[in-house]
Length: 331
Image 1: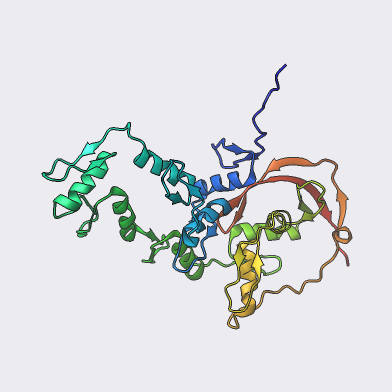
Image 2: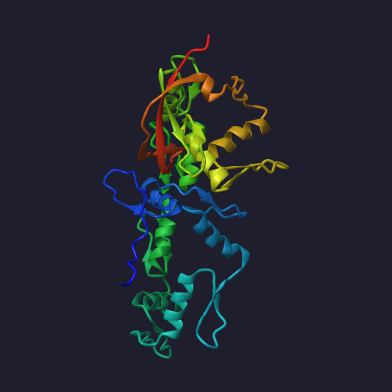
């Protein structure tokens, strides 16, 4: 009998409510989660480029535009055009080498140019046969006009931006990254632990820290095969997976002469303090003790599930296995 080919097992599941998306690759899930969060964690570091992307693949594809490399050659005989993406090559073949489509012809006397799309004809007429471009900015008082609707939308972001929602603050960022930077620098919330007076910037970090004062602690075990490492926070687990298993260290220190890279943005921020004399160093002097010396009872069963990890608005998802452990006091 013939072989049965089954669809790859989709074990990377979106954990957002009412979303049933599932994928067979971690990077596909991470890219999907950007649609929920609006965060694009992979930023282009090319001078003057402020673009960012949802996955390392899309960043690498974009960086081809800076390098000048065009790996996708036109497949039509005699054509020497090349492109940075397969989609651009397909678009080129459709527009230039496919002749079955309907053509829109400019009817101005002496012109006769043909276009595949009606909006291309309209833009041509505005540019070549009239004084004003067709599409005008919809914001009151703005007289800017453009030849394509996409250019109008891009321009209108200058007016709209990303306004700060804090009461009394008039700041509006031109980009989402600029808005987030403003929030971090101007409206940083300081939350203090009522047990030990340590301070945190967000409630999730405070709640995670407060587990150290609880009689029961949750420990997250690495789900990778043959790895028996365990961590007390999801941040440390994700950092371990990124740097050790995936070898991803996308966050580089920009200080002159420092070449250190990190798998998590928070790790870079924590490291940057060593270069800034105006900021106090984090108190990292607590003595380290082995897990065995601090923990007593290990519960019987392992549970498999998915979790959501809010790391500076970057949402990550993976399989986790949970232990319940009881802390013993060493006096």
